[in-house]
Length: 145
Image (tube, one colour):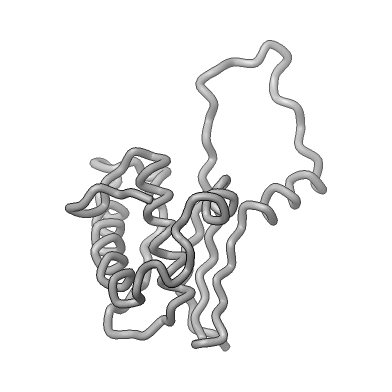
């Protein structure tokens, strides 16, 4: 059985605008398509870990905006991921101070574990995406692409 780093972020974003006709129901088929398109499963041949990210728009952003693979070293991303994960988990444990709809679940990330390049790449890019999209700052440096 695989060890899992599980990052399930089901973010339900409410629109600030009201619709005159109300929201149209989403069919089961359309809902499955939306979830499939917004789900990134990181399952590397390098190791036995996986990350599941369910975040509307992340997959498209990753393809179109993220730096290409091998732009950053694994060591660089591991160092950043450790900082991001620590700050993320602090925020999960302080729901009165930080929006609990943004920080729902803790991330189990061991800095002494080698998760491989692919997992670190996607996790790092998720943190960049998250910080830019939700105007959050998870570390002492400004998130940028």
